[in-house]
Image (cartoon, rainbow, N blue to C red; front, top):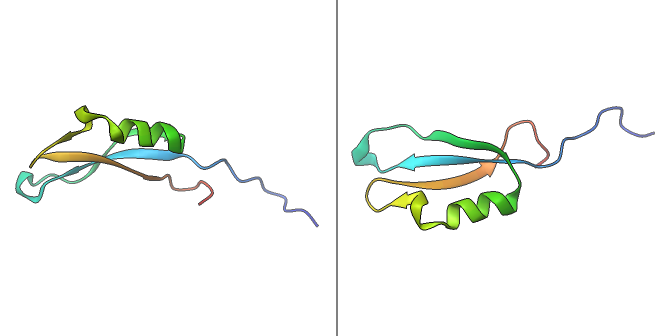
Length: 65
């Protein structure tokens, strides 16, 4: 028997993480990206500042792991 629900394709979000000295919580920058798009974003030089922040990515809630 086939499952009655469909699973959405895996999507990712970009999260900006701050250095502890900045005293800011991580925040979501972009959502709904493919893994390749998320990797390309995080690989850019303008997505990090030494001692201040960096952008990382993770699987969005509710999508297939």
